[in-house]
Length: 312
Ligand SMILES: NC(=O)c1ccc[n+]([C@@H]2O[C@H](COP(=O)([O-])OP(=O)(O)OC[C@H]3O[C@@H](n4cnc5c(N)ncnc54)[C@H](O)[C@@H]3O)[C@@H](O)[C@H]2O)c1
Image 1 (cartoon, rainbow, N blue to C red):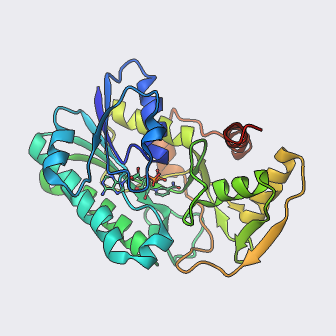
Image 2 (image 1 turned 135 degrees about the horizontal axis):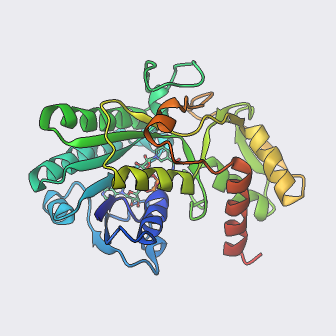
């Protein structure tokens, strides 16, 4: 099987490329990435076919999709605050970009496309855990663009018979996740601060909760989706229903690092959701063979990776 990963130089994409290349039935992995938030060094040592281009560059995208069996569409400007700062850029990369990927797939006759949506689409819906059949209410331009991403993917199934699947990723974490920028995700930010002796910045009171998903769990699900060309008329939460507050996460890091960590509380972030926990029935139903990695195990592997980066 030949797979294209859009956004494959990013955190999730590069981990996925590594995961897929280790599988015998994956014959080639191609990546298209404009390196806007990703880094070519994430692909060091991986035998991927790399195309440096934006998914907004349609001729390059057509080259990228040629001859592949499945497309995993991850390319996006992946951040709530970035979208609040520049909604038009998020719309173009995430929404127009998705339309381009689907159009290119249709034109090239690629029949399987899985896209990355996000738990952020649930927005202000307070219900927990969140089922794919609950109402959505995006609270940021990013969340709107992700709702559009999944909407387009599913519409292409009905309109053109493409086998599409829209994954709602929750908080994905693991080795290779970048900490060194203003828009970094919470776990790498905490680890970077902890290992460099800085206080952990908690935006809000720390009771906000997240459903943390270890990167290998996500890669295993996507690999299974590629192998069986899994598709569905409805989105699927790619998370397993854990509900961990930031304060609980910090307690777990303190336990694993064997030290007490300084905390600094700051203003809550605009557009942030208070609680996030997936109803995991559909992911179990569609991917019955996948066992998720626990937060304890995933956090330990992530700490080890961060320590190795710092030479500790
Ligand atoms: N990390 C998470 O917890 C999480 C949660 C929900 C959804 N997602 C989604 O998963 C996907 C991957 O996220 P990530 O965490 O790996 O982020 P990332 O920033 O590490 O990866 C995104 C990649 O897309 C590339 N990209 C951006 N715009 C592009 C364009 N126009 N053309 C080509 N490439 C482009 C970037 O250079 C980068 O390599 C995104 O769609 C994101 O919205 C991630």
